[in-house]
Length: 210
Image 1: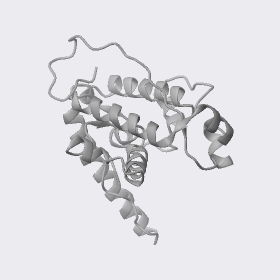
Image 2 (image 1 turned 135 degrees about the vertical axis):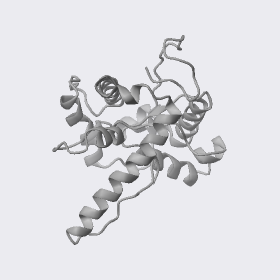
Image 3 (image 1 turned 120 degrees about the vertical axis):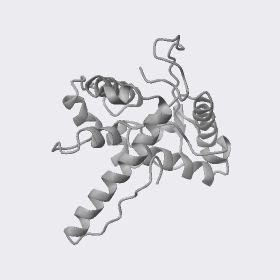
Image 4 (image 1 turned 120 degrees about the horizontal axis):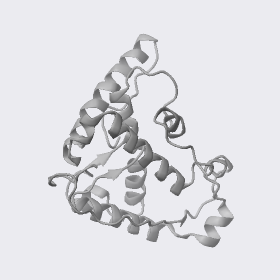
């Protein structure tokens, strides 16, 4: 079990999990290509969603409270989601995650970064759906919905920790620092490969945000 930053040994009492969902009306039409992935239409968002400003503020507040308790936030491909959330928070003048926390958003656990670090030479895609097969996690029929993706992501992380016990022995802060270093190594190697092919090296070295 992954321990909060600075926590004692695994096995201590932990809070019971709870589930929170948000649906925002972005105020603009949702592209058909996006609807094809997550199944949310413009009409559904307008009918059942809440104003994006309210949802953003609640989501950011929940994340910050989680971090302030020392718990990690698990995000698959964290630079995409966290950078997007921060961009929207700034656009709506709600205060970035850094401003709310008084520091960098941390700790974060990213199964994609860990997979690159722990199984560097494996061929094939590294999408969440692909990784369920690699780690023996059922691929849910409603993949790409928020609930299904979270369930699969946590399943992959659990199997990963069992396969690579070294990461399971780290607390959240140690694991965060490990991922910062490993992402930079991966980005340098990938950037070098792109340059060797005459392609532009635009790979961000920063993690968990770009």
